[in-house]
Length: 296
Image 1: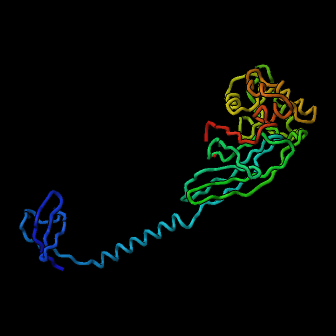
Image 2: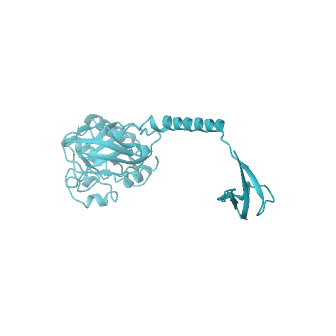
Image 3: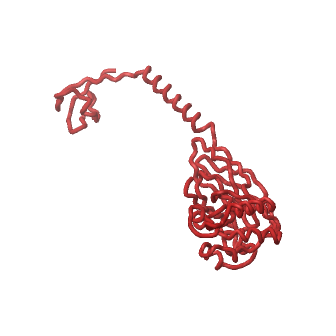
C-alpha cells in the first residue's frame, strides 16, 4: 500500500502530515527523508510482513513454554520435620533442606499443638529450632509451615513427649576450659558417667548441647555457651544427677559469673537446669533462637 502525504509542519521529533482528503497524521520526523520541510510531498509505503509475524509468534510461544517448564511444573516441596533431641522442658526440631525450585521463601514457622511459636531461627541454613519452656512428661504435636511465593506448604506432623525427671538421656554436655592440674582421668570418668546414664557428649558446643562442663571461664566453647544461654556448670552436677537418679537443680553448680541472669530468675529442678529460661516451667512455650556464628 502506497500513500501520499504533504508535509504540513516539522517539529523536533514529530511531523504533521496532511492526506489528500485533508486528514492530519502525526508521524515521527526521524523517519522522513533528510531535508524534508513544510510543503514537501512524501510517499509512504506500508505492507504486512507475514514471515516476521510467524517468527515473532513462534518465539513468543517458545518463551511461554520455557516459563511454564521453569516456573509452572515444579512447585515447592513440603519439608520433612523430625525430632533432633528431647529434654524435660525442650524439644529440638530439625528438617530436610528446603526445596523451593523457582519460588521465593516468605516465612518459616513452627507450630506447637496448633499454635505458632514465636520463632527466631539461628539461620535458615542450619535447619533446626529449639522449642523451650515445655512441661515435664507431656506429649506435644509439632509441624512446620512454609510460606512461599507459590503458596503455603506444611510439613508432616509429629508427636513427641518430653522426658520425666528420672530420664537423663536428654543430657548432652560439651567440655569447656579445665584447670591445668585436671588430668585426663577426670574427663574419662565424666564420659563413663555419661555412658552409664545414657547421656551424650561432644567436644564443641552444638545445637543439642544442654550444659557446658567447665572449671574456669574463657575459651571458644565458653563464649559460645554464654552467647547461646547454655548453662555452664561444674562436673560435680553430672555425678549428683547420676547418684540421685533424676535431674537435679544446676543453680548451685553454676560456674561463677556464667549464668547470673538464669540464677536470679527462680529455683527448682526444672527452672535451673534443662530450660534456658529461668522461669521455664511457668513460661509459655517459645523457640530458643540460638544465633550460630556460622551458617541451616
